[in-house]
Image (cartoon, rainbow, N blue to C red; front, top):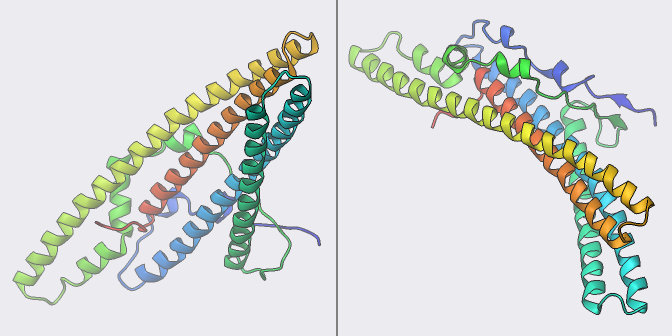
Length: 276
């Protein structure tokens, strides 16, 4: 069936930071927060879905490597150049990778059905899930927890409710509510700072993972050259290739974490964060 574009991109479903400053009242806060929770849920599922897609590609490549490793182990075993333990390990690695791939595919299918249903399609619809835009340095540079906390406080349904409940009440009740609101704001401020620190850590981890990925590309080129010149065995070549694939997996994991934590920060600004 003709694939349908899912939202164009994850950005098209998001709410821009400059729109989050619009006034929210006690009356519309629950609806606004419910809307933002749906958007956040869709974002989170898209991030998870695309991450599984990337893992699937890497695992497919690893399975090809394990199949070749097993073939070489059997071949060299018949020549007395490898042990039975080598063959058993190659079989085990291949079996585990195939099992992991089946699990990934099952999880991917579940996420897909949940995602398209949340977006209004029937569970059996054929929908193309758009790629997730990377969180850019510009996106991160725009974050300022000491300023953003004001947006988060203004949009938080719990705090809005507490402020609203102080009208037409006794002075002691109002004082208690104001004190609780102050405590809650301090907790929210700490949460915002923690989320921001997570993002900065993620940024550093992603940079390191990217450096490792770039280095692995040079390693791959060297392996290809050595293999073509007969300088390394097939087993050595395959072992090096697996290390390269591991670097790709580490990069995708770091990318996923940054996307996840950035999404959490933006949802905190939209008022969707527990105060605890």
